[in-house]
Length: 368
Image (cartoon, rainbow, N blue to C red; front, side, top):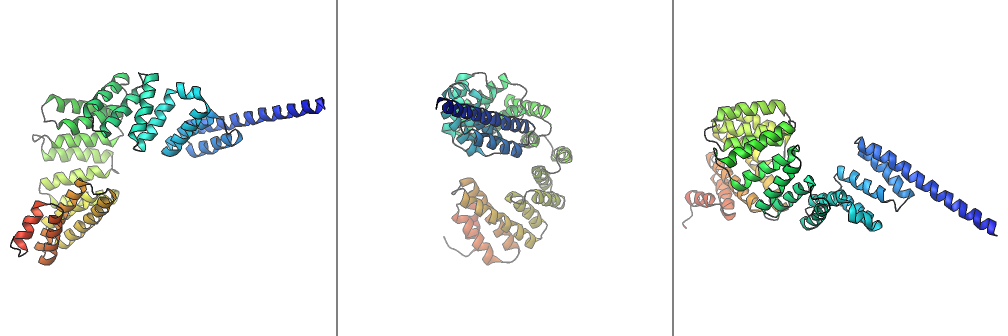
């Protein structure tokens, strides 16, 4: 009997070792695939490792990293939380996984839980630049702009080679301070944009922000802006925003025919951006091509209505919708359809647009 028990114990022991070895082998393949950015293959291997050993903490943490790369943020939160429940020491010491879970919460717009994890990460490692950066993003979400700026300043101080930090600081300063050209704030934003571009010349966003800053400077001519946008478009031919911006610059130069092709290209690259339809409609209107203008205004209005309904009555979308209805009303009037014009003016007025109300009173036979 003792021999049988000894043999049974030996077999169980050997099986446990084999299972552990197998889980570690799958983990190695998963880690190699993850490092090679083959995320789906990595996920396949790490799932096998976890199937073999359902309490494999390293497996859950690696799977969280993989799922983060796949933008599956709910799974990231679940895996890290489960791993921390399995290993209390990991929960207390692994700052990088508190940061990763905080980042996932931030992507899920759960600012409170994101801040809890990021603050814990900073308690463990006060010099973690990305933690300061993410805290800045949370403060922006809470409209705490000065606190956000302090966090971004600290992130840049700790890691001066990350383009994203400079870009976000420039964006924040532009949004919050509304800088005037020639001021120190304006120049500091342009400096951040310059550094962001130097660190990552393949990111189109700092160029777009630079363009937005140029438009604030009345001394910067429309022709110079168009020339600068020509360069951006050559470098980023698949980025719709630059075609939109060049189209707007041409509209301000009364180059409606030239602007049409830019707005059309922008629409081809981003068919759900209502502003491109509205701006192309304006070009058609100014060229007396009223039916084409009406088609574009209607498309813009359809997109805005869907966005307004999905946003639970966002005021900024409501304002754009009312303005576009008013523009379509004016085009209907020029096109000889006063009934449709009055209908659009009435809708614009109901949405709170004063210009829509004035047009309705002026053109629609009402005495009030």
